[in-house]
Image (cartoon, rainbow, N blue to C red; front, side, top):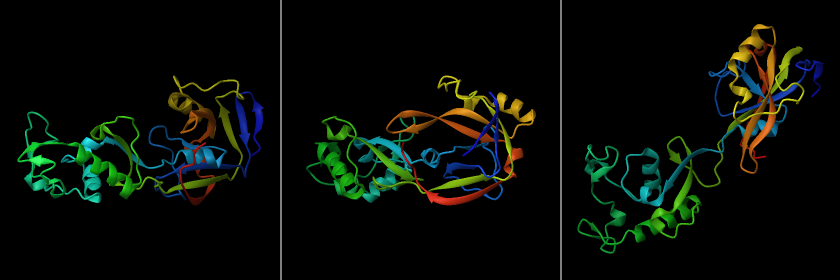
Length: 264
């Protein structure tokens, strides 16, 4: 992509330039809009970087002792049912003065109604129940614990989710990669000053909304900033982004393709 530099802080993005935007949001792609936070439509010149902004999935970080116990959390309940743990929520009673979200009494799930687990209402050994959960998370969903705790009841798992539903370990959210083509020359203010300004995680450029509004009122179509993508391999991965102001959005065309998260 050719960018014509007018000065240290001003660029011309010529008609026909191609930019990319990755998202899981559904909106009218023929009538694009900026984000609710800053009213800017953010793009990059690298489709792979754009796809890092498509999340892999939703995520629930939890431990086994939260999965085998009765719960009011809809995702935990879905996990339980998928691995054969079925608590009758109509039997739940709550002590709201202690923990309003956790039942203080309940009827045991049928899978655990066994003397090796229980004697009356007293727990004899929790470990078999915990090991059952670990084995089933591996068998049904393909997960392995992420910590080194030797106690099965404190094994931790990162469970991928879509809405409230647990997903298999290899699941990736389906997103959209937007290919954005400019229909005229765009005048862009370069906050990186040709790369001389480094990005800062302490005061990131994408939070400088007042500067965006001042730039927009000065007649610019957009702004170039230092930005950061989240990479499993590199952590905060620095790159540049071009944000388009509302005045520019009527002069772009958009093509869409199904896409998933890409790591750098």
